[in-house]
Image (cartoon, rainbow, N blue to C red; front, side, top):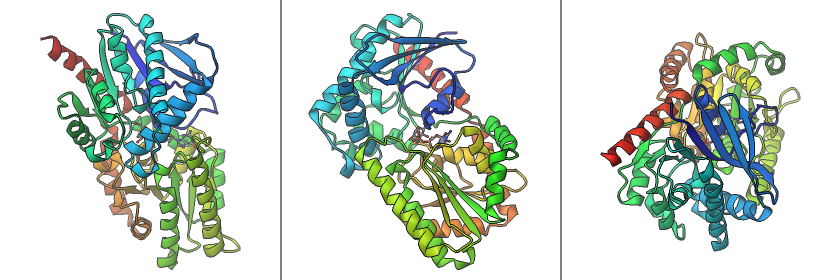
Length: 444
Ligand code: GDG
């Protein structure tokens, strides 16, 4: 079996530990890796002047990471990746900040990665580059003479061409994408946008990311009986739990979500003191001003909602900005009557799938999901809402809270079948098979 070389900005710690950062990419790829020889290459997460790769071998996987200098981190990561590409690709042109120096720093780090990776490659490796931090990497490897199959997967959305056009020198990034044998995106609509932007994009395809639904379901069954889930359950005093779990990021629509919950309590007073909304939102990119401002806004909103709607024995919102271990989260999802997932834009959104996976088949909770998450194209049983309208979120919540068990079961069953059919392992196999086929087409 050909070795798989995965390249991503962050490489997860070889051995899981409690401090592991929340993030969809690492979760999905770890599930995908089991059972084949692999090299996982990327940034170590550390800042130093060292240029020596750090290497750890665990089973069949070699983890190889590089440190970034303070300047590289500022220009490539905080600057161009997070300050320009992340908002742009999430349709938020108004939040982008472009600096030519950052684009140059972004290209320089991609070249540094290519230079370090090149000597580690074997002729029959299959290389799979991940996400918006590394768009130019394939072209940089080709410039060094790499002949291997190289594929790219974009985890975040791709916006309509007219929005992408706002990026200075954006055509250069689109040209870089042509160096890949295959470019994967999450949905057909992302693929259409990217093909339009590239003018010719025969090698662009939709590969919706999956997750290990059966494994997460088994975790949820165990975890719902453990101490933390029992503590949460006892603390609800019979109230229905509405659960949100997201990195604290402006793409996730959290202020609108809080306002939607407040609108529920106002417009449908029968739910007062009968529901509790728990939002878990581990701080992410806390060194970026926009993210600090978002946290302050949510602190204030949560405080105001609790002040206005709360009672002496009831806090309507619980808001936690620490990460919760994955095994505990599975049990929390199983306890929840409603999963509230309302990003303004999201490539896929694995939390929506995790909520479905964790439910009790005999009495499942209901998913209220943004129309603008990639997951909405797959999860036909969810209640879809426009996350920009708090009133629509309130109506979705009300419908979910009052849904009878028969309907909840049939909606859940449809979605569970969908996610069981597309595990992370299936997803990566589909991509790898297509990558292999695309190279064959070029050769013949
Ligand atoms: C990007 C794209 C796409 C969250 N809080 C905690 C925690 N999490 C875990 C969730 C889930 C993961 O992090 C988040 O994944 P998402 O898919 O929801 O979102 P992004 O991080 O933005 O991921 C996204 C994904 O890549 C994969 O392609 O779906 O659209 O934006 O697994 O459960 N995990 C733990 N504690 C937390 O507090 N342990």
